[in-house]
Structure formats: structure tokens, C-alpha cells
Image (cartoon, rainbow, N blue to C red):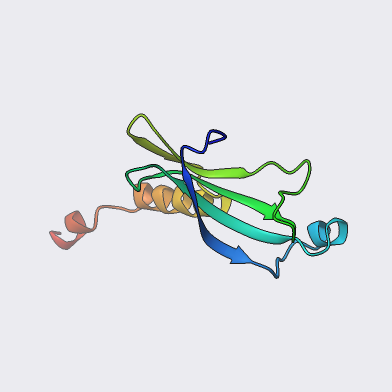
Length: 105
């Protein structure tokens, strides 16, 4: 990325962020979600970071990777809320008696 091999495409830009602790320490910061794409237009990485009005990333706050495409595999970190919801649904599905066997009774 440092060599300029990928192109940055801003996916979401939120000038009014809901992180009061960030705004308190860094007035004017905005939330940015961006993709870096390769020469074939494939998303290689999706990042979230806070950017200052001059375009710099907040010092000490490294970009947070959300997706990473490497060796033909797309990796992502599932959000905690989504993971808990998925696990609850999977547990409910395991605990639910088979509906088709009930209808045959």
C-alpha cells in the first residue's frame, strides 16, 4: 500500500461522527470507511479510520481493517452484535424440534 500499488476509494464519509470522545480530543475529525482496490478492481482491504480536516489520520489511531482479501480468500471480522445474534439463531435452530416430523404425526 505504501508503494501506491492500490487505489483508495472512499466508501463512506461521515463528518458528524457519534464518538464524543474522539471529537473532544480531535475537533473536526470525521469517520471514513474506505476500500483499497487492486489494478483489476478487486477490493483488497476495507478500512475504517478517523481523519482530520487536513486529510491526516488521527495520530496514534491506526486504521481498523474490516475486510482483507489475501490469497483468494476474503476475511472479515464479524461485529460482536451480529455474532451474538447469529449464535443465538443457530442455538435456537438446534434446540427447535424438527417441524417436518411434527407434521407427520
